[in-house]
Length: 110
Image (cartoon, rainbow, N blue to C red):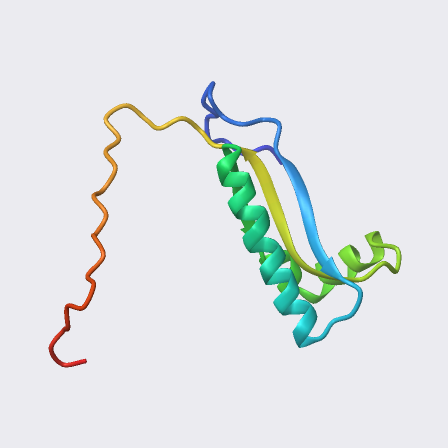
């Protein structure tokens, strides 16, 4: 069923999906997938592509099995990514200031 929320003219209608997976399902493979995610996210950011990780499809046994089937025996799914062009910032949007490097400043109670 189609949703009822309006879609703005700037909304990305050309998103694609990617699947991070590995040949085996062990701790080292999950670590490598995390490293791959980090590299992909940094690259996407420099290209102006937004990344939305979708872990819920991997956390549900049925959808994880379906993804594994789609991989045709190539491996075990770890994470689904939605890649698209980010919506432009709305009028009046203000970036929040970032904190500077604290250097050697110590906090009390730590």
